[in-house]
Figure 1 (cartoon, rainbow, N blue to C red):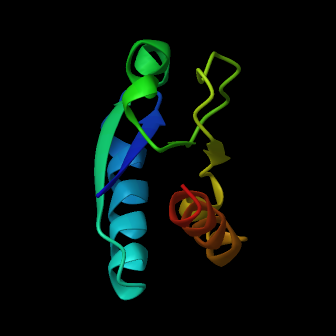
Figure 2 (cartoon, rainbow, N blue to C red):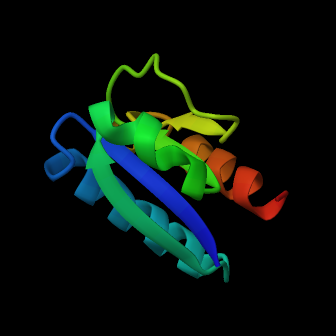
Length: 94
């Protein structure tokens, strides 16, 4: 099972919406994923245990080699399909 870390400012609201959309999309594609939410400021201490990082806010921190996808399109709807496909591509290539 692939693990996805979803981060937003407080680790609650927008990351919950994004995590739900990711899980739904991956389920439709037949890919099992586990999503966990966190605050952006907590990412550097947690990211190494995940297959991909998705953020809804500006992030310039260390990802420790974990692929990073900007998840704002999953909130706005503009480019959401491409973002979901990018996440899919990352986790299915590992």
